[in-house]
Length: 423
Image 1 (tube, rainbow, N blue to C red):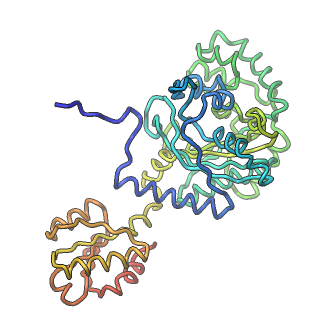
Image 2 (image 1 turned 90 degrees about the vertical axis):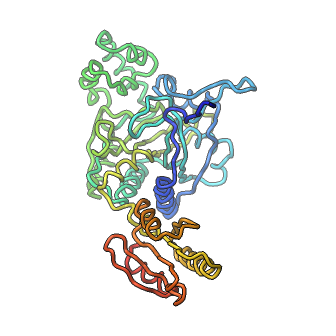
Image 3 (image 1 turned 90 degrees about the horizontal axis):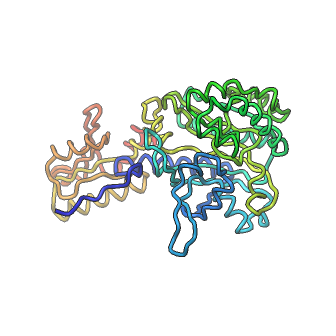
């Protein structure tokens, strides 16, 4: 017997019944960002490895441990993208977008790849929504990025969101900050793990990514306030957040896992995810474009993990997916005549034109099996077409939640359903 081929570990199929949630989330995200002036960009999943080693940073866990990199048939070193900001920057520079407009607000949606240990909300192929605000700077820009992300998540009904902020210092003074941090950690290097001793030489900020208990104790003692006090721009951002009643906390140990960040960095967390509770994060990066051979322009952005967001939404703390459920209508045709098929198809077309998604089991004539399938698919309303309904040009509309049934003419069904459901 032939060996059964399975999917790669950490790379999962998204099947019917689940994919509808992804589609609905993408639809909402697209409307949200485009209504605020953002334009979509799509980049290849394969890039030259050098793009990420230069931008993300050799000392980052992403480059050091997690990238899917290999040599192609032409002898080129290429990588499945582990994040999107570097790819967007490469595209903007290569295609000369900043010669077409002074600044850009871009958003993206797509798969990323990291060879980390698969766990809840963390897969080797995972997906992100993100934005990049290019050639824009200052606390007003940082405020827009943070409130944009906060409003997006709030719009899904998420409560108890926690915003964490830190100030990594300007691009100009980060070298001095790194030097002082290196001096501090060098004094306790014997208590650091092997990875952190390596990070100490490559990029000391990556020490803050370590989860080892002994390193955590040293990290907590790092004198951030002495080494890099909060800037005036950061304090202006704080004031603006307070004025908008956006809750936040300053966490001086927050550095994010990418080397290109400077200035304000942030993440939004939710308790439903447990210890690894970040749903999204981002920050300012003012050196990246120049380091990749482009113009010297400031930028900020964020990315949001779709799997992690879905995990929070599916905890039952929000009715975000109710409209998706309400769009789905099950049509149960119990008749096989040509007349019944034509009536069925006409009704299907009318409902689709009014925004409903049609579920069906073609060829099935057992009402019991139809209702069982509708229950399995969690469809609230079933439209039943039997011989009497067909004779009178009607459908029996059954509410699977209440058990209520009504007879309706075809032309009255859409308005009836819209009155019952919030679309």
